[in-house]
Image (cartoon, rainbow, N blue to C red; front, top):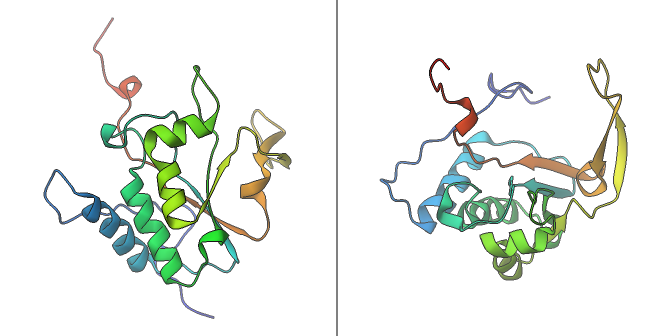
Length: 176
């Protein structure tokens, strides 16, 4: 059995600081993804991978709100470099906001539709995906939660690729 690094625990968050000076280029973003995944050296014991990039709603790639397609390209490049066929890689999201829950619109606004066409990976709208009802042990509120079948598939290794950002609601606005 291979020994785990101290950071390879379920409760660990790993941050990578790119050596590139701002503003970063598409190549810098792709290299950051590739370098991070190579350093993590995570075993992927499944034949398929689902990437969830946290596209809450479609905005320009450089907005800082969503995961930039260049970063996602680096993740995809890392996975294909490890032998995963593009057809075994899926980008899956189910955001959409209040205006539209059609992820095709949001994927297009961010540029993921072009990325999928260029790389051959799949795009899935989790809003339209079949659900699997998953029991929540030691629940506090919900007994079950619907999870998209695409990411709950037992043959899929799930990778969350969130965008680290601050939230307006977390700011101290002083005493009222």
